[in-house]
Length: 409
Ligand SMILES: *[C@@H]1O[C@H](CO)[C@@H](O)[C@H](O)[C@H]1NC(C)=O
Image (cartoon, rainbow, N blue to C red):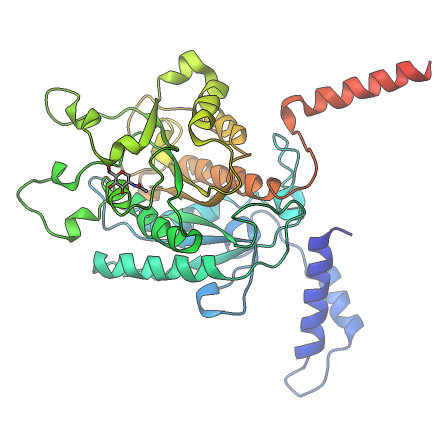
């Protein structure tokens, strides 16, 4: 029996023993409870209350005894956007769109692993209750929440547990506008006590000096917006300047030359892979460029930040600042799979704004798939065997079988 099943069985048995009382004080016999489970403990993909991937939802922030290896956390915040609002509804939409990610049916063919039936305990920790009235306060609420959730002790030691992330739970945030990455980085910097490598997928740089929006009307709070949070994060020393990368870039700029793009400053901490580069490099070339920059170092924590607008508006129309000419979902999934060996300690999927999505949930589906690929990588990085995955795995097995049958002849 896999570990997660043992855990489930024990958890259920535990609850049966501790609180199995009828209202009238009679104890429900064990066999009756087992019978009920056999009969009713099933969910269809389209049924159930919408947690991410049908995971057990827990309001972890008010359950200090709740522990997990990977936490999914919603950050419904969108009062720092420059164009379309609405990403406060992102977590709900992504959760709803994750409905077909059931533990029983989530073997990731590309990765060779079912992340929901492996060593890791994954919990949907619900949403951070973020105020929509005061962004300064919102920043603080998010920081405190990420710090609390990321500081808890883990449940299961990964079979292959090494490096700086081995004893901390991993956080996957469903945004929210992109500025939620700033409090997340502050918390990770606090937990890991070193600048974080940021791999940033986006049509936009998000490293702009806030004066870009208005040089005249400035306040402390105008600096906290969804186009300048990496500028702020860099100035605060949260981002590692020699290992970080932007990828998928293709935005219009201010002014009459490329100064808005190439101006010196903290944005120089990132290399830049443009959306168009995929035509020359191919998805695996994009992967190689990124890994050449980040390296693969178990002692260096990586934050993976995915603005869904990295995808073309034809695949992800429901977003805050759409830019035509982006990547397809297939290309992006392939790039994400290529990055599975990175030492990811935290990730976000942001800027899903469901009001601009279509009836087929195109954007939310893409975001749920991105979360699935990231969660798969987090779990796979702790597995102590070479799983391979779709790329090469099937073919290798076939070859091995052929070789073996030849040997027998
Ligand atoms: C990265 O560069 C920026 C701008 O030069 C600087 O403010 C920041 O402290 C640097 N970060 C680290 C971690 O050294």
